[in-house]
Image (cartoon, rainbow, N blue to C red; front, top):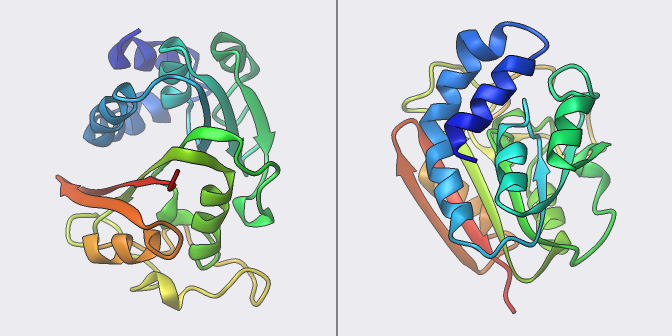
Amino acid sequence: MTLTEAQNIIEAGAPGPYYHDSYRRFEEEYLPTVTRLIGELLPRRALEIGPGWGTTMLWMAAQGWAVEVWDMIPKGVWITDDLLDKASATFRCRDIFEGPLQTEAYDLIVMTQVLAHLKHRPDPAVATCRAMLRPGGTLIVTALDPHFAHAHSTYRHWREVPEYGTAEPCPDMVVCLYETADLEELLRTSFAEVTVWQEGLLNYGVCVREA
């Protein structure tokens, strides 16, 4: 299955018009790079945090990955039971700040377009990702760069965001945007092997847990 074929399936089953009208075009800014990175890995067990409409989930499943997804948004708002069945994927309605359910459980964790929306300071979320990766496992993240994003964020830097449990969750949709150096600083709070770069509107980060 190609990425375009996966997007066609998502669009055909989307609960509303937003995917067709807006979100699909935004996916085309970053998913080609994300799927290329995933395609370089041996398909094993993957977790996607914040799967959105399920495009990456569906594509990964078609490549042979066993996929689990976590989202704070319940099933039916974006991802449907029918789509989960197509991907043979497991869904958990879960907040990443609740911590890992299992440690050293996944070979790949994907977290695209999630960091900007995290309601609390994000370094514990990155630590949770590391705890859930098997040795040698990979974390792939993307984040909008504030120089190119057509959005205003509540906080200028991720260290300014209140920590989980110390304040009410930030009510805004876009909590914090990430320059390349900010994203690298965040990822290095938990990982030693980090590669960060910019393409277009976004910054990409790939982390490998030490073997």
